[in-house]
Image 1 (cartoon, one colour):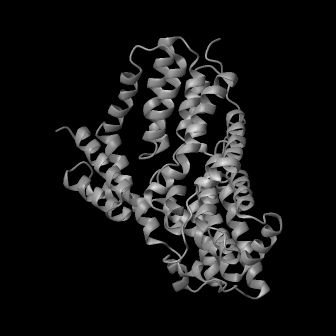
Image 2 (cartoon, rainbow, N blue to C red):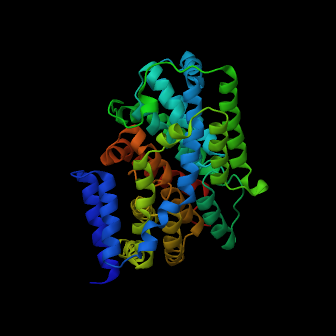
Image 3 (cartoon, rainbow, N blue to C red):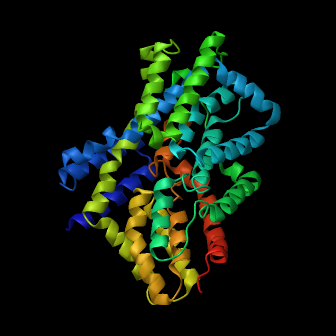
Length: 423
């Protein structure tokens, strides 16, 4: 059996275990990692490389810094202020969707979600709203914001932008906004009328994060509240201007954590307790599978499936649907950057074969790669809310598949109007 075939079999077994949930999701993650090592599809060093990820450090740091707002009682004040305007859970869902979309247009979607976690927990403990619904809303909003500006989901936007420019077509700073803004509006309409009903409603009892389960209002001296807000804002600014300062986001977040501990917002022990080991395992443990998919050629085999499915068809709309669906499936289990990198040359070749301008198909590829919303292992923001929301693996699919299909229809209808298929 070839390494690629063996990798695909392990992937199928992992997905089946995730969906059935007969054993805990994180146990499946660890068993998958062990299987990849024992079959020599990845080296032991590659297997644990994900746990040294700077993304994990950044997310942990931002969650702790954001939790300072909860610990000092600032979240209670924010909750009181927000609930004056968003009096119902449905209104709160919409408010979080909008705020998360705006924030992640200029900040990483992971950082945006990390900041929202303690704020949402604070709102829910004082209002009784469903934390699982609001956390999923923050996640979906953060993913939408990545499509609003070039810096939103910079890695993908720059990748597809550079490729389009290399082919001789223009791609400006707000080029992605031409499709990102309509999709965000569609998301908001869908969530207001339909999607809010699909969001998972999970009780907060039984969570392993003691900080957020207490319904008692938090109090702290005003100076501590001011410091917690100042540190969070400083971390925000530092992350936005990391290229100018030369201090990467994960280091900015670590500095913020140290500052909070030194100012007495948390004790060192409390800071450790805020780190969810479930989130760390989920974030780092799936890295070796993505590595194996890429290194063994399994991902390329899946990409080649695109050509097989399309066959001899020249129907550009059928081809668009196939590209979207295959990309969406692939990006649930591996980096969207790797997915786009693998599929880009195939998509360009298909465009040349059927005589269409490649820009439109590349944009379909780019948007579909941001549909990593159907599983908790799809991307860091999805990982991050998993343990705090108390979700099951299948909750992501049940909650978000409708939106993904709506986006598919929207892309097929809107993208050719912005980037025509034919000259």
